[in-house]
Image 1: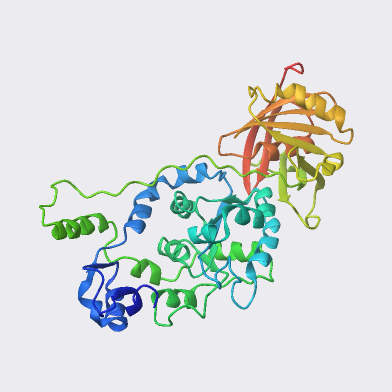
Image 2: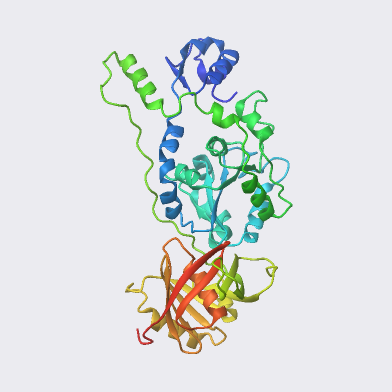
Length: 435
């Protein structure tokens, strides 16, 4: 058993190498006594400081979601993998699950799901950052974010609506928080059948890599059922690890413990990490549907990055291509061309000038869009209209609002856009064509 077997705990003379072995739950003390009785007397219940930091950060969930670029109406899906040949990022066991799973991600509408990947630090160390990013390059261009494996993975768990992973600790922590988990790799050859992780793996729902991903996630989130084991067995003293560990350390030092409370560093707010979608996006728009408040004139938008097939459903389709696309030839086919950059960025010049040049260069393009902020963009229509679109910071993606404008027509006013099952109000104002 990893970490609790004699080869990990005893020296060459068969004596414990540690004066104290800190465990988080009485069940682990029992397993230690069975696996390595020579070290049983060193067991100390000290809780789980990592989990305590996660618990303390739960009130900041909304801030973490905004940091990861999750908008209203979106669900944050966290993919995670531990380090093992049978892990999700290994060969996934009997099936090589990861390639199948990555190929399914374009099925998820951009405005319904935000996807982030958490990989164990040993995966990055073993293969190298360049190789990991190369393997996931297609997913990254479709808007998937690679989470810092040391600094930000806990914040991603706090922000998540669902987790797809394997038998590693990230999946276990997610279930302990009550977040629905879908297991894509179960590690049958590396888990002790009597361990708490094995019990969780047996009880958790399993991903079908050959079936559509969207319905599986929708069912997982709707049911919201999580095996009770992780919540019960992760720690026997939630929120109490700092005090227990400090008392243990001062006892060994032979010093009086400080009078103040023992505290853990809070999880910091991650840097803003919005999705960077540079893969071509197929968009379906449908104008004239009724709004949630009973009004007409709502434009429904559904977007799919790196779609392998034409999206199913009613509506008019168009192609959106980012200026930084991997294949510049796709720009000649685009109905909408997008780029990102602040209106005052000296490297780019005014949005009105870029949009004018873009429409002159690409005669088949109808709309040129510069996204200038999290809730704003400048658009130029082939008709000559130059407009500013503005919405809430956590509302609709400005690029999706521009697609709605293409369907509704280039006119000032208030545009109601439905994306991800949520209605968003976007203000459309006339801009100075000369900037």
